[in-house]
Image (cartoon, rainbow, N blue to C red; front, side):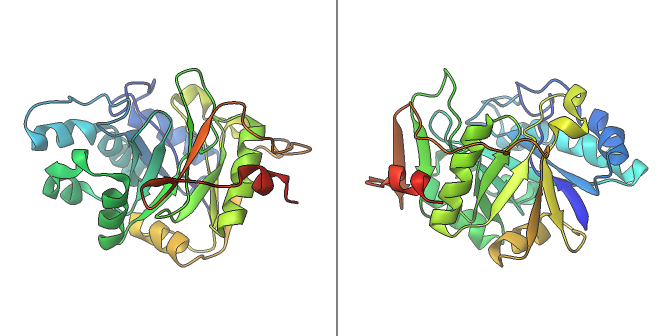
Length: 263
């Protein structure tokens, strides 16, 4: 089996990041990972790159964390792949896999895309969309957003989440018949230790980000990695915060209580 980190932030691309891309490489290599995805926050989110100016220069700045990690990874024998974390409303975020710098440069209009437009464009390019930490409840999040269409998988284990939030995400994915993923959502190299990292085990090594997209799109077997005690005895429970579900960009009724009560 081959182990990959799917959710990682650098301080070069994410304003909330605490470590540069190269700082992660030896740590993940020593933990036995075969590769990592750098998924820095894009311009609508907590991005470290400029929010204005020439598009190409902004893309160059955004890519620095990934490129720094990729250069170090090439030296040390750890694969590094490019990903994006895209944000719409507060807490409504999506992990995009299978894209590249050429895609970003060709689409300066993407900052104005709706969810549905983004999903369509990612899929047309051969990529995939994963809803990130769907039940995350934090002070800065006004409502919890649940996406019922257009996504290809649910990040059901996010080490930055609370365990009961992950338990809810697992049940949501099952109700939607979607694959599940695991990621660390790591923001600093000090947390690159086995008890604080997640990831996915795949049966074949990845050549590029589109390989991972194909795994999810074709429902290939994926085993989740996370600290073993994380979900033991944890129950899904209705979020205390208000939530909203979307079907093809429209808010829709959804019996969340029935989903979370199922075994």
